Image 1 (cartoon, one colour):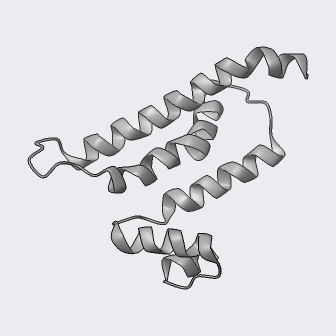
Image 2 (spheres, helix red, strand yellow; image 1 turned 120 degrees about the vertical axis):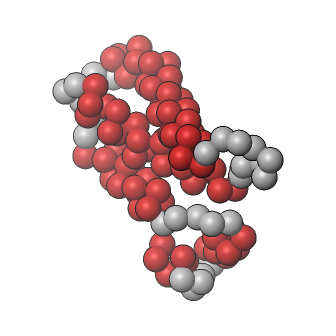
Length: 113
């Protein structure tokens, strides 16, 4: 369905909203696909053996959102910052936000096993 939306085929009003955004901004489908993969990870895994695994999870569930946001938030035309640097910074922010969410919930999660 995501591929259809990126190709301009909408099935409902939510699809229409995303299709309109895709038409207006230079969005890449990869972060969207990766975010879906992150949602799938949430259904199959709840523990991570090391930071590398945790970082990977954080990319899929939050880093992707940051990457999707960059073309919409956009870079000022007069900015001297390279786009690659902006995407890297956004990715770090998304992953940092997810790590913060995990730390915030660690007590509650521990009480649930």
